[in-house]
Image (tube, rainbow, N blue to C red; front, side):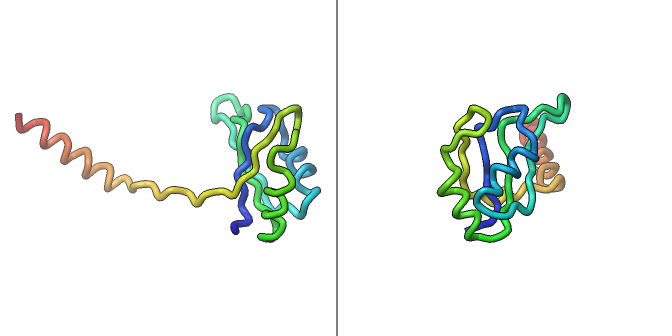
Length: 105
């Protein structure tokens, strides 16, 4: 199991401090990353928490998933590894192939 957890259905005004206090009930928190809108700075309602050990991460899922935090029933699951993004070169070559096909007609 990964130490990194995905948390969702968060109140938009929730702070990292409140998340830290909530998750510290089950173990030590290494990092917190709340996802925010880049223009407004407002929370998007989800984020990531990394626990100090795999055992604490497992305990967090079992004990905190479905619990209420800031009047919302939160979801705590194991975070999936990030998808590999195509490099700019790959996207450029796809675009060039598409354009070359469309100009043949």
